[in-house]
Amino acid sequence: MSAPEKPAQKHAPEPDLYTEVAFEVFVGMASRIYSAPSVAGQSKPDPKALALLAFKLAEAFLAAEKETPRAKAAAEVLSKARVNLDDVDLSHVFKSTGKP
Image (tube, rainbow, N blue to C red; front, side, top):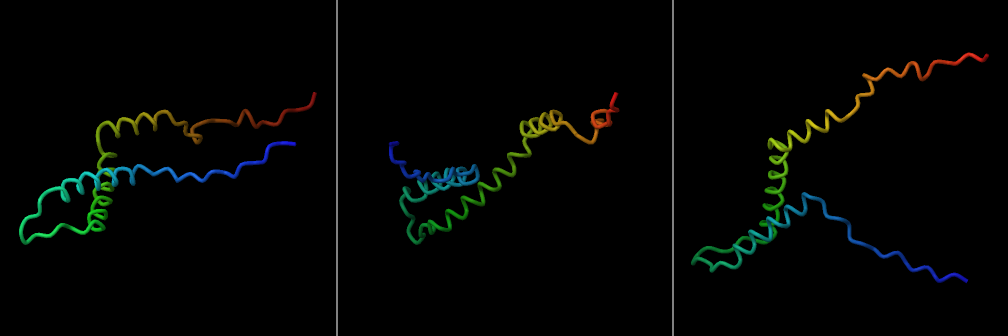
């Protein structure tokens, strides 16, 4: 007599960094654009177009972030920490052992 199983709760997928940056850019731009008084003869941009611009800016930001000195140093540390298996001699491990 075990307790009835509860149905698995569906969680929203974790947003990736690209989406998070685009969201922050969109919110920042939208708050400035749509809260400012409109100038005569000038209309506000379409929110969908603003969202597309936010994604393009996020992509450019993430691409440029990889070129910073800090990111280059972190990539260098990771490359030094990796073991290149082509440089490792494991032939002694796989030698057949003779039976005494």
